[in-house]
Amino acid sequence: MTDETVDCFNCGRANPEWAQVCRSCGVVLRHGEDRVVPTGRYPTDRDSLISIGAVIGTIFAALLIGLFVSSLNPTDPTVGRGGTPSPSPSPSASVAPSVSASIPASVPPSPSPTPVLPATVVFGTTLDGNRQVTDPTETFTPGMTFAHSLTSTAPFGVATLGEQVVRLNEDGTEGDEIVAAAGNQLPVDPAGTTAGFVGPDAADFVRDWGVGVYEMRIYSGETLIARGQFRLAEG
Image (tube, rainbow, N blue to C red; front, side, top):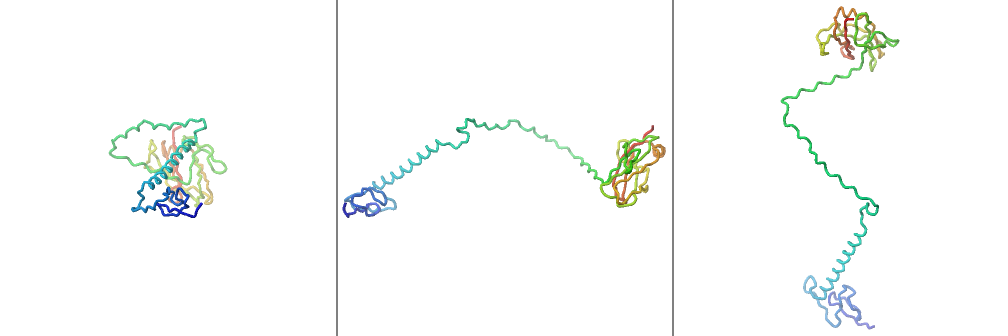
C-alpha cells in the first residue's frame, strides 16, 4: 500500500489510491482522471447519473420487498381463527309512509291538567277509630248513613275546614247549582292530617237535593285542598 491518494471527480474527497469508490459519495473513482466539477446545480455526467440511479433503484426495491412482507402478515383479526366475517346487514328497502299533506284548519287546545290537590276525600257509611272511612262507596240511597273522611299530605294548620257541595250534570260536567255553601264547617285538629264526619241518613239529602251526581269541595280558608264526587239515588 502507498500513501498516494486519488481525488473523487464528483465531490473532491481524497481517497486512498487503491480505493475503487469514493468513501464520501460512493461514486466510482476514475483513477488517472481529473475531478469533474459539476457546472449546474445537479450532476449531469454519466457516471454520477448511473450512481444516483443505482441508489434510487435500491430504495425502490426495498419498498417492494416491504410491501410483499407486509402482505404475508395481514392485520385482519378474523384471519387464522377459522371464522368467517359476518356480512354487513343491507339497509332496509322499506320506505316510511308519506305524511298526508292535509292539515286541519284549526287544532283544538289541549285541556289543562287538573292540579294535584294536597288532600283526598273518601265517601262511605262508617268510620274507624282514626276517623277514616272503612267501607268506601260513591252511591247513597235512603237508609244509608252518609259519611266521609279526609287525608292530607300536610297538617291542616287550621281548626275548621269549609265544605261546599255542587250538583253536577249527568255527564259529570260542571254544574251551577250549589246545594251546600262552603260555610259548612268541619272541625279538625290543626296539627293533624286526618279528619272524618258522619252525617245523617242519605234520605235527607235525597229529599232536600234530589237524586243526581254531586261534588264535594273542601277548603282551607279560600284554598281548595280536596274534591270528590258521589251520587244520590232512590232506594
